[in-house]
Image (cartoon, rainbow, N blue to C red):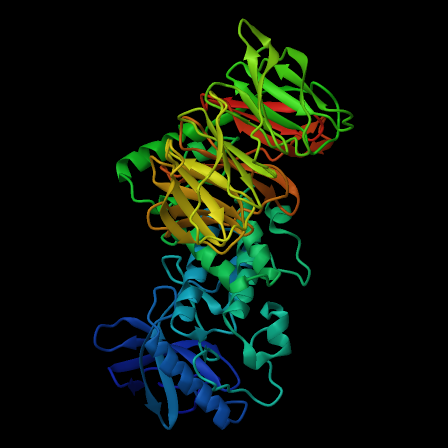
Length: 634
């Protein structure tokens, strides 16, 4: 008995047996796994002694069927064809005693399922495995294949700790109508199958793979098995990982645009595929969260990127002071940072007449003085111009206020701009940081441009071929260019003093836009849509990056610092709580401000608006209970 048959393996195969494949010879060493109709052996390649895995279909406890044979032959063809670092690689194939065999890469680190059970890995490892899983699945889809059985038991780990997708036996070529199964069989594993795939297995597509991948991601990130009705990831893991990553995984589980969300996850997780640590010292400060170096796709000087990311100075905001001028519960509460030493808090939950109540607040001393401004239907629609004046648009006029010279605690009305032939239907208002000019957007007509210094007012001259339709979102791109969203496009106009405005570029953008910002220095346009924040090249319109930030309704969703290209972007934490993300596109970094504040550890209050100071050194956030919180440089 020097060469016994391997237990539960084909009787013909023994330790030391030699198999001849199409590309080389292999020696059987030991059993790795066995099943009803096949077994996997550890082997050795004769040419170089490298370890390999050999899968043999032999018909052990169950008789082989034509379907089973064809499935395995398809697995051989698919695995030999598909070459990717996050798929188990196939080297060779052949036959022994009439049984097909497949020679594959030997992956020695066990399964991800076992690691999830032990829950002994850290967040960086979880992100690396998540990135590798998503990119492996996306590669399959790019080649026209659907895996249909993604689950932690089919995710193997190499000796170096890299994830590799295995078991391509039921992979389906989406370009073919071929569908092999036994009568009544369900392809895949029940816990990881979408509702649609359970209902119509033959119609499985990339969105069903995305659902299964999201189930795996949930277990990897949460370090526990997923349940039929899982809690939101943020409820399980807290603040260890970015909330928008958790939101995107939960979106896949809800089967909402799952295949598109998987692509966004691929972009988001790209920096983590090689396991490089992105938890910089700055990111470990209590006020910051995980940097998103996917933003580093913007071509910039690498040394400058690293230096700025390491310091993370533009994102290092710390909560400094809080004041509550008046207790209330009003989502229309808004704060405008009028000047470096003055905040204007506007609220009137029970407005009567033509005036709104407000408070001028000194952010250093927190002293406050009550003032009045003109009433309007949308309290949050107001802005500051380059002269620290408050601009409040009405239905058919614009009111201009400024701080009384020599008396910073007094806000006085300067003028009302009342053009005779222009109706605003104002929805948005943005300021030009280079000159005293405002753009007031409308959903019915082109924007109105106002010179707040002279009182001049005119409508943007738009291209005659454009049918107006949108939410009136605009943004200044430098001193003389205006970005406008309308009719499924983002358009950049060059503004002319004589009113002869010229269309510079027009980019297709069919998604609804709820907020715009732009940077002339970076040559970038930032568009908030329902699915997240997109960064576009201002010249070509190509997408530079995407972040799946979920927005809650109300208020401008993003504000760019007037002195630095730092974005403050509103998003939601979990399903409801508002939060603020700070994004530095140059460094490719992202940080989170606290999503709310607690009073006595019991009551949590959501924010209602936010605004940068004129110098960009401080960010003022107002909450729905009438509280104002100031965040300043660390």
